[in-house]
Length: 378
Image 1 (tube, rainbow, N blue to C red):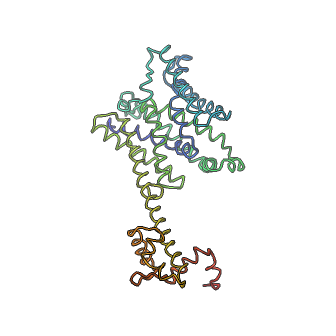
Image 2: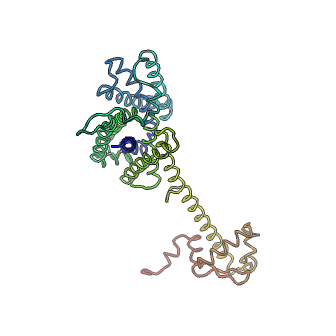
Image 3: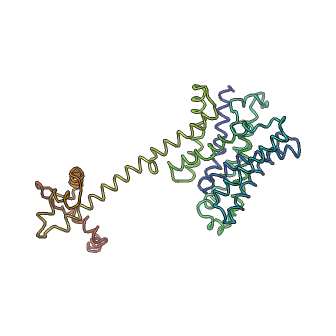
């Protein structure tokens, strides 16, 4: 396995493992929990080292994961006091615990290989230095650990998919069905903590948070079904790892930073060009709705003055500028669209509704009247 493949595979596994749990955090409005957990594990790592002397292994994993879950629990307890908002509670809790971890690190663990800078940014480019032999092949430690975490997260999501889905969108219904949404939510946070611990040595907290939230947010902008969001988020994470690595090595910059930036590029593209929720699609939809409303306004105007003594003055193109206060260009565009739609006929400056236009105007002014008047079966 080449070094490049080891690095990209590590980033991809972080992305898949993080996006599996991050999708549910995002949909539950708990995106900040990943940031809180990612920072608070520093305190867990330091406390475990002070208690046991271990700098790695199961005890460190357990201690860091516990610190992450405890951070969210403290933030939830603070939020339940109703003295601060939920997001403020998280914002108050994790900086305090992270700062405490850094202080303990500086006071008691200066000579230990636990570096706050590494925790934040990681160094995915060096994952190939620490390896274990598997079937005669040297495999990075991080890759092995992340493979296990990814499989655990995948098993959890697939096993409890229905319960997680109902608990995410309707916790009351999940409780009524006996799905224990609170327990599953706790398990989700625990897995998020474990994923953070497994990730931070290789990619750091920043890339972990990026992989937890950004691919899920990208998928959320592109598709509606939960299963598709999960698949798309994982695909975005893998693609970000590949493209981020290629861009970072070409520009000779941080590989982790390149991967995180790649997730942002995918999100920006989805935000701009998403077929349903993208900014361009929304702009086109608003433009279409505005055009339709202008066509309706013209139809109602012509309908109300048709057959009246002032029809010759009102149902002409010039009246649209004077009476509807439309500019000449806007009046010309609305008339052209209404002609194309078959709503009006034009004879010089005079405008008249077609049968289709009259039906549209009646439906606007008297909703449902036209349908009630229509013979049954027509």
